[in-house]
Amino acid sequence: MRKKLNVGFITTLSGRWPRELPERRLEEYGKWLEDNLQGVNIIKENELVGSTAKAEETIRKFKKEEIDIVVMVYGAFTGDDIPCQFAEELKVPIILWAPYEPPFDKDTRLWANALVAATMNGASLHRLGHKYHVIYGDKEEERTSAKVKGIITSYNVVKQLKGTVLGLLGYRPTAFYNSAFDEGLIRKTFGIRMESTDLKVVFDRMSKIPEDIVKADMENVSSRFDVSRLPEGHLENHSRLYFALQEVIREQGYDFSTIKCWPEMGQLKTTPCAVMSRLADDKDMNIICEGDVDAGLALIVQNYITGLPGFITDMINIDEKENTMTFWHCGNAPLSLMNTNHEVSINNHPLAGQGTAFYGSLKTGKVTVARFCNIHGSYKLFLLRGEAVDTPRYTKGVMVNVRVKAPVREIVEGIISHGIPHHYSIVWDDVADTMISVANMLGIEVIEM
Image (cartoon, one colour):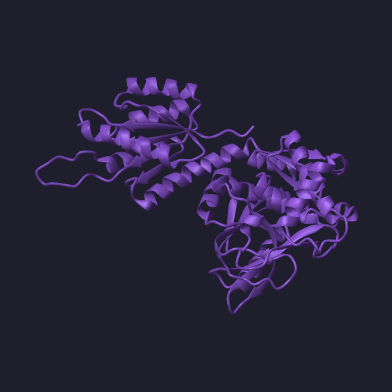
């Protein structure tokens, strides 16, 4: 079971420093955390922590709440004793957050001296071997708030990974060696547990979906799309598979799934591209195509960061003049990623001709392209930042051109030289920095191009 990150919040000071500013920071920064950190549990100490006795009281409270990380905001200067006490007894990372000093005046004292305290405390924690992060700046400053959110999000992703169940619906397609995976290494590196369900279970379940439910879904799809391009029986198979996968995934408790989408599924005229597209949006069921677990690891991390569905894809072409890369796949992209300026249609599978797939161009905007790669027995994160541009579809399936900074030919040559496989996960957001942070926490080397 996936669990949310438990974030402890304290505001500190030492000695006889004036308490008006610390009290204000206690209230304002505590509220900011509650308003801005989504998907985590905030456990606040509602009184200032200004002594080792108060620290011990708060630590007991935090232990009961199973705190995963502490955000320590400097109300005013704080000695090394308090942060070291929290680090030693809780054995969790600490964010030392030093807001800016109030305006200086030559005839008044310093009111906080937080920067000095943060550097001093950080050095002591470093010397003692504790994990910490120093943040310098006010909560209203975008770069400061983004850094805090990024650190918390990264720890939250790592915690959720350790409770993730990845369902394997079949193994891998014929001759796709790069879709093979090392289950033990994945469990050790990411904490993800895998379980398997044979495709026959899915096929058997398809035959048991009630006729009225199948008919209603066929009518729903027909009302949204022109289904005249589908061969006889393909739409019924589509609807049956849509419900069968939902039932199997829910019953097995899978958070994410991979699927061996050919050749068996095609032989039964039920290649699942369009079904996967719908499930990602309708039911928040992300299914990784062609059994590619390692590409799916990137999709899982991207989903935990953003809450958005991703797109597992091939990179099929480059344009050196426009410095773009064409990302394409058979028809599995979630409908929410489609570019509404271009036609979206449901069709027979573009290559196998044995199922349903959506054809269309994907939307514009910032994207992060990523893949975790098992290279010589250890994981590396391949990462690419880009901008999806308006792309009229010029081949069957779903596609988009992504403009990148580095010369595209150099990127392709780099992919080849590193031995990076051909599937990638794209999410429509710039989450590269957070993915790097997650990789660092997991001890994974980053290959950014």
